Amino acid sequence: MSSKVRKNIFNALFLAALLAVTVWAIFKDQDLGIILDTLAGIPPVFLVIGLVLVLLYVCSESVIIKYLLSTVQIRVPLLNCIRYSFVGFFYSCITPSATGGQPMQIYYMKKQNIDIPTATIILMLVTIEYKFVLVFVGLAVVLFGQGLVQSLTAEVQFFLYLGIALNVFCVSFMSLLVFLPGTAKFLITKGFGLLKKLHLMKEKNHRTERLENSMDIYREASVFLKNNKLAIFNTTVISFIQRFFLFFITYVVYRSFGLHAESAVTITVLQSIISISVDMLPLPGGMGISEGLYLRIFAPIFGGMTAATASLLVSRGFSYYVLIIVSGIVSFITHLTVKDKGKIQKEKGKR
Image (cartoon, rainbow, N blue to C red; front, side, top):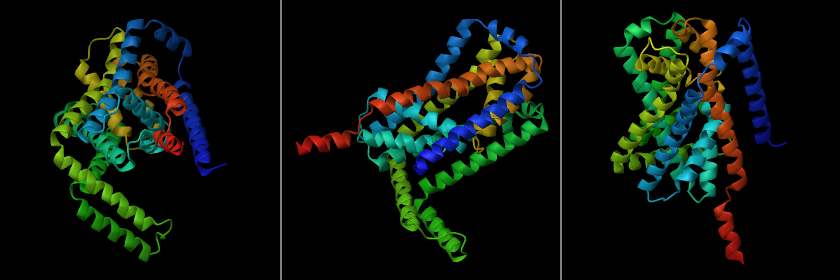
């Protein structure tokens, strides 16, 4: 059994165990009958809207990928970009800290003759924009929404500030790599050399060479940014819209329960707080923490823990579990149908 297969099996078992613990924690003190009756009363139109928002969320990234590829004269059908997005979301959802998404996207992009350096740069920019949106929203909430923040429990506030800090660090580090690649390369290689001298890290598998090659990717990304500022601005705007497609699902669920006391802005911002809080945590999809924060935040708004739990099943169901199922199906179909164009061309050349 290869190490990759073992890793996938471990991730699947870890995800299943985490799901089991999460389900137990949510329902251990709840009346399942009342929750099911509440869910049965939701008008189907709201469920359709929720599904549409999830699909728009994924397809928005596809538009960003297609847009950025077009700036380097690579013409890719939107359908292919949609496949890349679903593959990325599936593997991000099932791996800790969403680390598995981009490698799989690059794998399928390479199969369709998009070279690895270009694919890496494009997806790295998508990640920076994605994280930047969370940082921007998080800082805006802290600076201009202190009344709302102070209404949250101390535990929720802790995860909010932790999430903002981790995302600020991530965006700052990636920005350093992109905007000051020479300085970043110097600092990282010197740091790596120091770790080797202290015997905290060993030189193996050409680590130094691979590190320097990765730095070259960031230098190329820096050039890309300088030459395509308008494209970066436009795709960042799309990233904002994309994120709010997902945040808005909770407001749709709120209205589906016949509630209207809170505004769409308040509900959407509260949902964004959850996303910011868990985004950088080393858990697949922030599972467990997301559900816990949701119940702490929305129990008063939905009028009790039972109603909040029912709303959680719908909101989190669309934003995570439905996304896993749909993206998993698309990923499986992609695996079966996407052919390696490079191999096909080589085989034709031999004939």
